[in-house]
Length: 120
Image 1 (cartoon, rainbow, N blue to C red):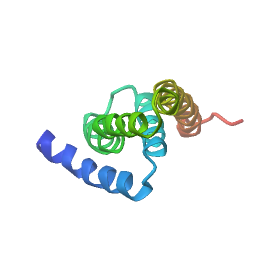
Image 2: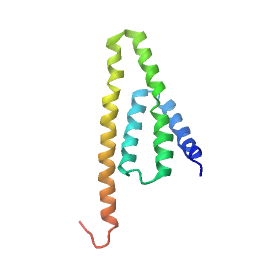
Image 3: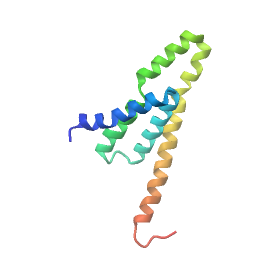
Image 4: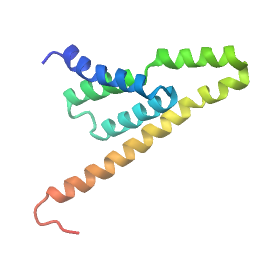
């Protein structure tokens, strides 16, 4: 399947979820969490990287929407209104780290259950 088609398969639901949530910060955090979960796979699955990473999460965490949010914050109240929007970067990094740690934990437990003779 061509890469562009795989990206499109993920992008449409990602964009729809972003529109449905209507809260850009929540959409960005969910997308970063998803990227973290995907990173836990270690890039081993190219189609998942294209569908989930580039398509779904890329569409969900749109940079242009974040810039629009920054512009609206400036117009509404100047510099103090920008603080929540600027906090999105460290919050996104934290959400990515949480997704990565959770994904690694789940993978570790899943791999342990699939090995014959291993019981806890």
